[in-house]
Length: 543
Image (cartoon, rainbow, N blue to C red; front, side, top):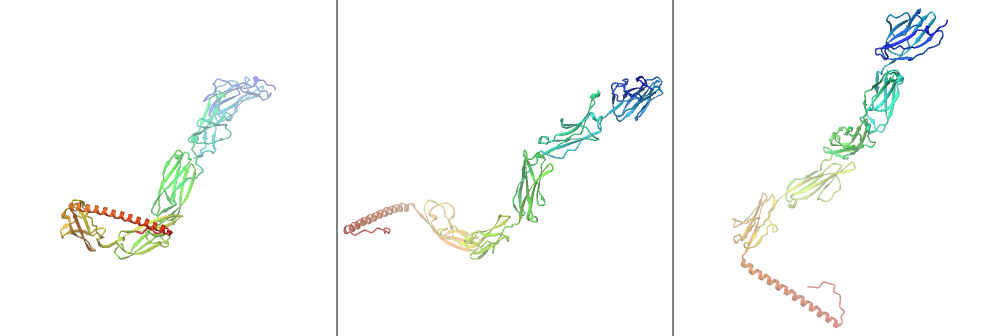
């Protein structure tokens, strides 16, 4: 039994909702004779439609009265329109995936069938860039990873990895889900940059458009932490109940504003004040230690940036060193009393009492003295030295001795005789000594006072003998003071007498020297005449 093309069914197809081709456009498909095996082809061979869309298919036979005419497909279908003797129209709905519906006809001359390719397109359901690391070190490569779920046809689907709008990589979507990766170097200028991935479903060859899906962007944070540890400046030793200053600094940080600093001494966390530079920082903190922290403690400075930390540790020795004790037998004694001065300090310290004979080094020193008026107000200073962690620390303490002694009036501070010209300006001076300080009065005839320490004009009334009395709780002493007043006539007589005495004294010395030199020359002449050798003069010339 033979067959011909006119006996084969005609497969007419149109699709809708959303339509990509006009409904009245008929698509002739590849027809295959079950008997002859000779296909006949016409354009176009396939149709593309969105996922979930519908298609209208017209199946027709080449004979007028086919025995049977129908369609085989797993898609939902229903026959629409009354149809004719040799054609039927079906609507295929909810097309979710690619399919090849087949129309068949059974004519008297034989059986035939025709297939068409329905290509479904849809954009990806998920385009997602894998999370970036919280911090990315500068100079190390970053791997970007994008996952794509869904999307068809895959032959027209590509995936791009982007920095901002700059394309870093473009690859085909392969696998389900498709995963696309690329590795890029990271620099400081990448800090704050947005990275994303984008899919392109290019249906322009099917007279459609380019469909794009872009993931949510991820912002990259880069950092640069130098390999050098921070510089830590702090006291190596710290005394209990005192305050020290700690400074921690580091250069070469990026971004420096994101860097954090941790300072701690043992279990004590410090509260630093941080100063930022262009790419450096300096953290300064005060630290005060207590007796509970005495001993060796670790001072830690940590600079944290990104997910990395640079640390510096330093040993600080906490010590307790009270000032030495300086003890006097009594802080106030009478003249002639024996006083013991003692200095005692930390058991490991060495003390020295200033102003006393040197003693063997040790934590204790003392000496004995007999108090004199010159010791009143004398300070005894004790210096203690302690070695802590290879450093010498010093403490000092001072005590003052008060010596009680009776009033004194002596010639040095209260002269017994004053001679002043009349009408001259003079200041009588008389100082009484003692502890407690005595009161001083100088009276003539028991009533007329001498103005001690005051500038006065010398008159005849000032002349006379005064009785000066110094009195304190420790007793009293007296001393006579005479004031002589010279009148102008005595001055006229005295001046010529003094001048004459000077002239006569000068003339006498000159005569004596002349006669002496004359005798020496005469003696030497006689020796020369007698032939007696002269001896060298080895002694000073006698007067």
